[in-house]
Amino acid sequence: MESEELMSSLPKEKGWMYSYLYKFQGFWYGAKHLQGAIKCQKQFQAQNSDVLLITSPKSGTTWLKAIIFTLVNRTRYPVEKNHPLLNKNPHDLVPFLEANLYDNQIQDQSSFRLFAAHVPYHSLPKTVHDSACKIIYLCRNPKDTFVSLWHFSNNLKPDKTGTNSLEDAFDLFCRGVSPCGPFWDHVLDYWKEFKENSERILFLRYEDMKEEPGVHLRRLAQFLGCPFLAVEEETGMVEEILKLCGFDNLSKLEINRTGKLANGVENKAFFRRGEVGDWKNLLPISMVKTIDQITEQKFSGVGLVL
Image (cartoon, rainbow, N blue to C red; front, side, top):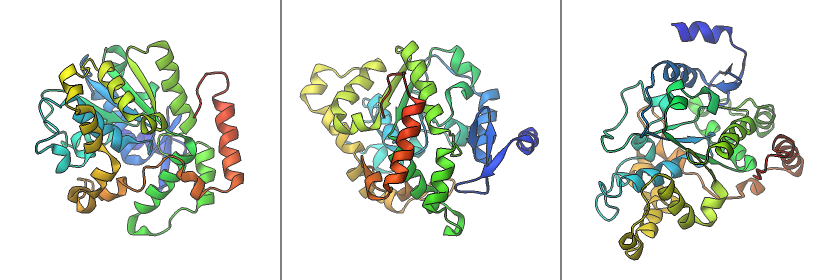
């Protein structure tokens, strides 16, 4: 295959979950996701009405998928009835372009084309750049992102053998060798595009959404052109959506405690803690200082604080 020939020529480093990560267009991918990203670049035909949910891995992707799916489908799937989230994991409802699009796993979305991706901005398909589709980008503090990624990758290691030590994973992360990393470059590219075109790209921080979820849910609705009506506000729809999509609710559902995705990953792997500041329970002062120094250096002068 053409993509396999390409991979053989790319720089590669030790992987987090599988053998290797490959550097393509300045960012690092696992083999399967790289093949998917290349196919997307060549084949995906964006429509002006599409919405893309973009995150760096382990930055609140599952929560964002649940919220946006429920928000844009609130007429089609009323929250108070047998909602799809009660029986399906958010990753089954909002497919990843680079992981699901060409595996025939996309659900019926005749009322709304909603996709997710971890792909860096400049590696998105050309049809995305040329269209008027909207992009929602969610980022997270790099320390929490790293801790979540370390736990997640070790949990997904085949047979749970050969897990990454905290020190080895930290070295890779800080050197930018992480899934769709460097983390800081991934965030910065979307931040710059947001500053230049805020009508098309909405940039959100995970910590802000956790602190004021109602404010940012309304902001999302406004951005997507489906603001909450007065009657919806009066009946508490904002609060109902947040309750349905909340970590406590989703993590306790049977589908997320015992179910699996089509690729075999257990749904419970996506519901570890979901807290802000969890890094304080794990990272020594030396690691905290190192990440903070990298973040300050990378984001100096751009007006972004994580």
